[in-house]
Amino acid sequence: MADGLPYQVSWGSEAQALVKELLRDARNPLARAELARTIRGLNDQLKRDPRGVGVVYQVTGVIEERLATVDSIRALFAVDTERNYVAVRTCHALWRGNGKVPE
Image (cartoon, rainbow, N blue to C red; front, side):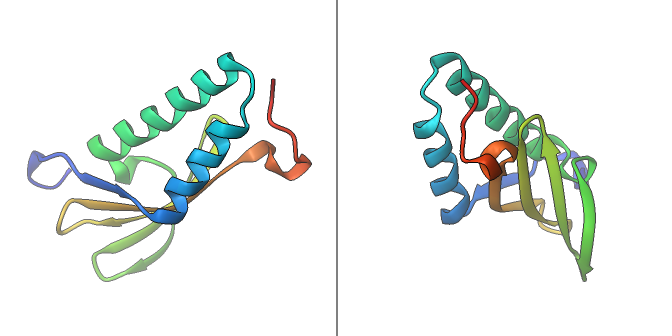
């Protein structure tokens, strides 16, 4: 963490829409609650130490593009290492490929 300060995390409109869709599609309350916990946990990790989450797939100057899989969620995000800023670009549920949300 640069200067020991927490990172500011911003979820882009695409990521926000996908999270809302995932929560809406999870009909089982337990699955919905688990998904919400996973998203909150990812957000907390990104605030504390985003460079410790996932893997770097591209670096441009002070911007690291990263891919992370946390439980059933895969997220693409960028870390500005100079400004302590994280932009979550998109996220997907790993089960979406079969069109079914776990019950």
